[in-house]
Image 1 (cartoon, rainbow, N blue to C red):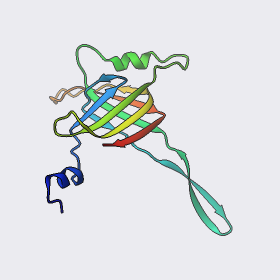
Image 2: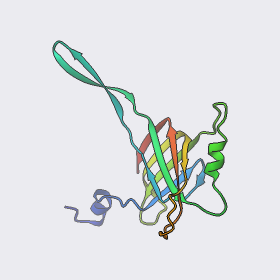
Image 3: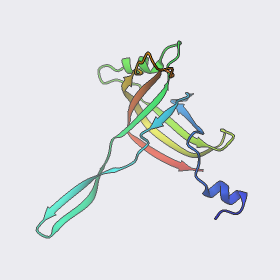
Image 4: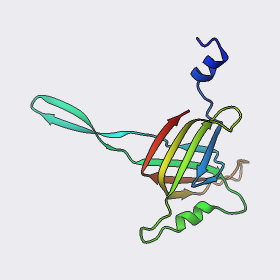
Length: 148
């Protein structure tokens, strides 16, 4: 059991609502970020002695980022439409869980060479009073994690 303020600061879980996103050098607010997953495929070998499982290639890195639509437009729409002839502007993205001040990163995920694969409009409902949220799906080369 944590007994001091330092013990609490290092052993208690970090709330998920305090995060920042640096999107290719630009700070952008998102209401939700998901898909920060690392994993490997499983290779199954079957022979006369039984079944053996081994790690294989890394799984694809797929991120989903959601944010409210604003009148100024969407740079994500422009980014997705810029893809042509296998040429795309890939971006590095940094997502950081921060301390209570919001200034000091505690855990940071770095996503390398991300590019858009899908941009979804919000679901429209005349009975709802929700914020219009666009959803951007990204593919990336890899993710690394750094702890403060």
